[in-house]
Image (cartoon, rainbow, N blue to C red):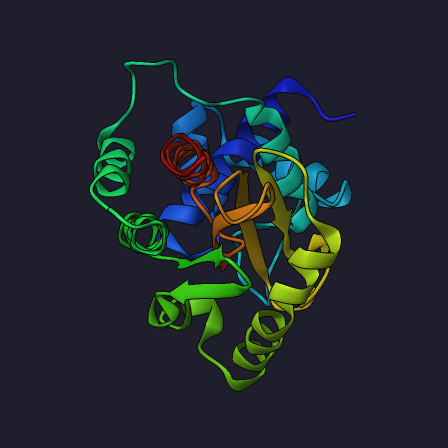
Length: 235
């Protein structure tokens, strides 16, 4: 069973790795938790044994696994902000959505703003089409510097629109991490999407696709906000 300190260490690894894109070592965490490096190494060994983190190659540091990310995302719960507490990014989405005018432009504005804020690939369904923006952002991430990963991501994108139509995720916010993705399981990406009702259908979607290394708390709030704002304007 995972202990409270192990939960906090896992959280620190997820958040630090998202920020610096390099494995997180025991020396850094020892300073954060004010304990010895040996203590951190012991806890990391247990977390690795439970499948929450892994040691890439011969690095002394650790990175989260899909299981570790899932535990972290589940621990966030319903993290949406109360009315009046929107941060700068969420306010930007709200403004861009309200100035969109026609529905197609409104949805594109929301996607393009998500791209700017998250540095991920943004996507949305517009009628029977999938609008994608920010592909360069995705392939500039260190995880995708390599032919095989790029190919796997491309295959996922090719199949994403038919999957959305078939599966029709029915939650206001859905997060698919790594191998949880119904298509492109080996692409090493996370798909964070929000369902919203619109003049097109009751099952329109907006979201982002990026590496599993994400600032999940912030990105989830932004995607959720985009869906809510679009529904408020387009329904």
